[in-house]
Image 1 (cartoon, rainbow, N blue to C red):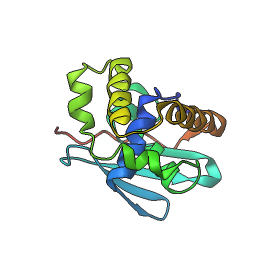
Image 2: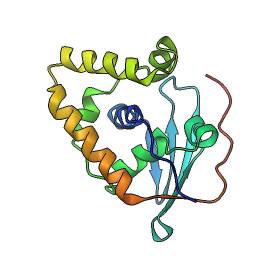
Image 3: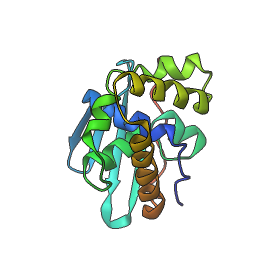
Length: 155
C-alpha cells in the first residue's frame, strides 16, 4: 500500500526539523523530536522495499507521508535539498503555528513565507525548492512499511 502525497506544508515542517537538528538517525531508522519538544516520533525505512513508516499524526490518522519521514528522506540524501532553506525554517514552533491557523495549511504557508521574507530568503526560489522536493516524493512512490504505529500522546 502506498503513502498518499502530503500537503506541501509538510515539506516546510520537514525542512524546519532539519534546521532545528531534531532528527536522530541510526541506520535506517530515526527518532524525530516534535517542534514543541514534548514528543518523539519513530521513523523506519527499508530502501529495498521502497517503504517507510512514521508514527506522526498525519501518517497515522490521515495516511499521507508526514514530516518526520520526509525529514528522514532528506537527511539520508534520498531526496536532495538546499540546507539554507532548512536553516531558514529552524526555530518555528510548528504546533503553535498550525494551531493558530486551525490547520489551514494555506494560511500557515502564507505566514511562513512572510517569516522567510523577513529573513531575506528569496521566496520564489524557496517555492521552487518545495516543488522540486514534492516532485521527488511523488516519483519515489513510497510504500507503507508494515502497520503505521499509533502516535505518541501529548502536545
